[in-house]
Length: 290
Length: 221
Image (cartoon, rainbow over all chains, first blue to last red; front, side, top):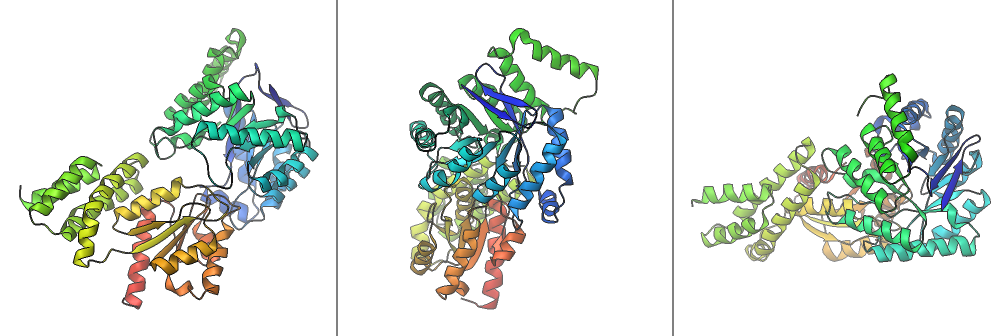
C-alpha cells in the first residue's frame, strides 16, 4: 500500500517498496523558548534555517507545527506554509490539534498534504475527516479515544480500525490516505512500553496493512544518549513494519540508521542509495555529524 | 548500627531506588525507636530532594527518578499510618489531574511521584478531569494545591476554564493553582491566572514548596 503526498512539484511515496519516509520534526515551537518568542512577534526567519538543516539532513517530508501558546496559530500556519513552500519542494505534514488551524493550513497548501492528526474520538473524526476529504489530503490517525491512550496493542488496533472504517466508509477517503500512528512511548517511563509499540506495528501491518507514522523522539525522552536509542529503535520498528516516522532529520546518526535499515530490508536495490550517500559524504562537507 | 548510620543508609538506598533495602531499613529504624518523622525528614525526603536536584542538573534520568520515587512510596506505606497517629502534618496536599479533553498522563504521573517523594499527599483524579470534578475533589479533600496538566494546545485553555470555575464557586483563594505540560510556558500560566508553573517534575516540587511557604507566611494555618 502506498500513500502519495505531494507539493506543487514533487511527489513522495510512503510504504510499499519505497524507502522509509523521514518526516522532519523540527518546525515545532514546543520546548523551544526562543522560537516561541519569535513566533509571538510574527518572526518566521528561524523556519528557513530549520528547513535548510532538515533538507541537508535527509528529510523527505516536513512536519509543520505552529502551536506556540498565545499566538494566532491559524495565521502562523498559513504564513509558515507559504514560506516553506517558497523555499523547498518537500511535501508538508500539517500538525495541529486545532481544526481551524488545519483548515487554514490546507487552504494555503499547494499539493497533497498529510494532516496530523485525527483521533478515534467521534467529534474529532467528524470535524477533521471532511476537511481531509475536501482537500484531497492524507491523514494520520491516532488510536486514542475520549477515555484513554490504550497500552494494549489489540485495543490500539481496534481504535485504528474504527478510524479506517469511518474515514473510508463515512467520508470516502481511500485507505491509502490513512496513516496510523502506532504510538511511541518513552522507554524511560516504563521499559515495557516500546515492545507494546512494536507489537502494535506488527498488528497494524498484518491486520490492516496500512502505512504508519510515529513520533520517534518520544521513545528516548528522559534518557541520556538519545541518538543511540533512536538509532536502535527505528530499525526495529522498520523491521516490524513501520513505514515512516516524524523524527530529527538533522541527526546523521538517526538518518543513517534508517538508510541502513532500508538497505537491510530490501528497500534499497543494489545498495545504490547507501553507496551514493557514502560518496556524497566523502565528496564534500555535508551536515555536521550530530 | 547507630541511628546516624541507619539514616545515612536509608538516604543512600532511597537515592539509588533500592526498594527492598528501603523497606527493611524503615522497619529496622522503627524497631530501633526512631520516629516516623525522623525517618521521613532526615532520610527519605532529603534523598528525593537530591534525586530532583540531580535530575535538574542532568545527572539523573527519568527511570532513576521513577525508581527512587517507588522506593520512597514503599516506605511511606509503612510510615503513613504512624505519622497519622502522631498527628504529624504532611508537607502539603495536592489534587492533581489532566484536564478535560486530554488523556495524556505520563508527565502528570511523574509529577505525582516527585510530589509524593517530597512528602506531599497526592490525590490523583486521573485524565479527562472536568472542572466540576476538580471542584468536588477540592471540597472533599481541602488540598493546599490543585495541579492541572495538559499536553495539547487545544486542551490548555481548560486551565482558564478550571480557574473560572473555581472563581465562580468562590473557591479560588482556597487553593494554589499550578499548571504544567509539554506545551505550557510560564507566560501562558501567567495569562490564565495560575499561581505556579514549572517545566519539569522536580522543578514543580520546588515551586510548590515556595508557593506554600509564601502562602503560610501570609496566613499561618
